Image (cartoon, rainbow, N blue to C red):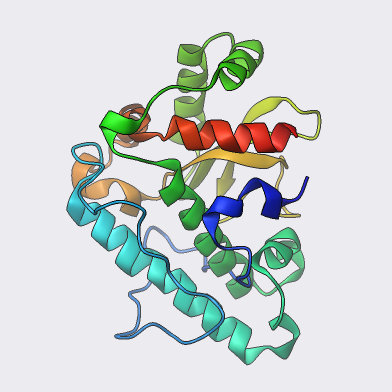
Length: 241
């Protein structure tokens, strides 16, 4: 099962990889114009205010237009400066992130993770529910949907500093919750727990601070209202195939 097959809808398979440095809590502001290169920032799949009141319009504009753009710009600079990185897909770079310069690992991860994250969410009225197959798998692995949400929140709350919390399909075909620091993800060779992500939440402060201040737990709790369960269920089905 390739990452390309699992995330065809992400429209990033033709991009190349790089990563963003391990900042304390914020990515650098982008240049006045995007840096030319093989990577580009796609528009959000919904309006900036579509996720309100869970995530407000100001946060979405700052997060997407400034932070995500900064990862894309830094990645393009790194790839342009290193002939060895040119012609490789984002998938290829992420998979071997541990062998690449830190700037590539961080900014490639930042670009991949955020593209995945935007697609994970939708307007509250469209959130829906897990498919029957996904609901059964969640119950088998965690006991119930509520217990899964509690475990996911706990993992996100306990992630020290900046990072991400994920629901993955592991090599054994079962669901598992894991977290990664900075802009790492479970597809990387350096991941402590590897697998195919089907759900992921950004727990860097820039993802929630304007609305929730330092209350990461409140953000993680409210976030379920904007999870696009149809998309998560599609990813799960693809991963199981």
